[in-house]
Image 1 (cartoon, rainbow, N blue to C red):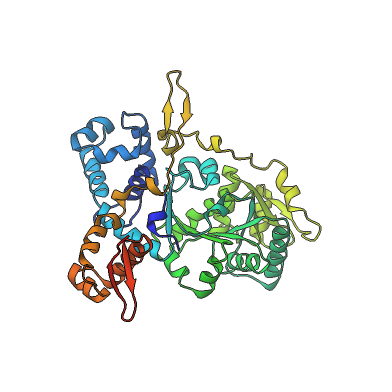
Image 2 (spheres, rainbow, N blue to C red):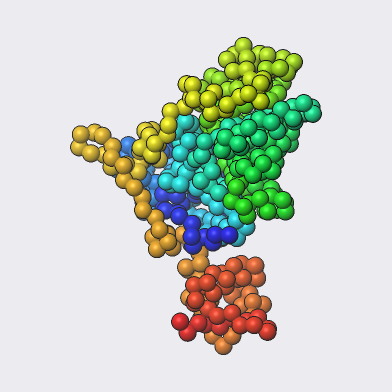
Length: 420
């Protein structure tokens, strides 16, 4: 698993994570910004001399008040959120040791389709595990009721098999029922899938079958929530738009009428036209019948269906890199305004030697650890000496050994400063 030292994080990323996520928050009264609050703040930053989120770190209360022109209690909240870098660093270190990474709207790694389709409705921060590049590949969404019949299962499997044969990724939500069936079938057919979760990412990756799948680089799990937070109806409703927006077209297998997440997601997509909506025609469900009346395109004969062909007609436009820069939000903040009023892209170059070391706690403690291992020390001795739990000491020691800063001795296991 990648360590934090290999994560591409800029100070703009850091600002978004601190402002828009619950990571590292211990004060129950401290609340991160909502999506609406962040978008409002982002517009103010873009239209002030601040220009980009990272510049918030160097500003005091009066400067923020003068530039942002927002109430003092909001400035106080921003300052408190930005002040928890140490807590954030420790928590991200813990998450990355489990294989959970983070990407923000300030990053060039952020899924392009979400940014293009949803614009400022796209989540500022996404936690993920697996192959992030899958989120940029062509594919179909598959959604449906949790309460499924055998005929729904067979139709779903046939649809997935057809999609995998056409080299399409499966996008779904990881819920029991149609979602889970489509993802398992995609993997069993040798294909790839992306699952946007509404429940705990940490709990999901503890399952052995998921860990085995992650090792193949053929799956991606994502969430816009704090990774240890369990299921909520609100999160499930929110993630519907992400599934639709990532796909080139989403297929609804079975839907209740006027209730449930499947119905809500489908009607929301039909209204906003994020992508094409397909629905199984030969199911005698009122939900399916009413969605067809609302504009969902009926599908029944899977055997003779070419998914690529039905996606081509009036499908979403091809997404180019420059197309993702069109809203007055983070994407605008990372532009340079020319004298003629146009925006010119400024690519953010981030490599291993340009990672924000001030954000990575390892770089603050490594000299102390090196000094502590003089004369050889065990993990127990280091834990007691530095007053840090053994799990954290072990993570740092592994990194130090990989960096050739410390040597690991055997029988018994102990550590000593490297001569390199």
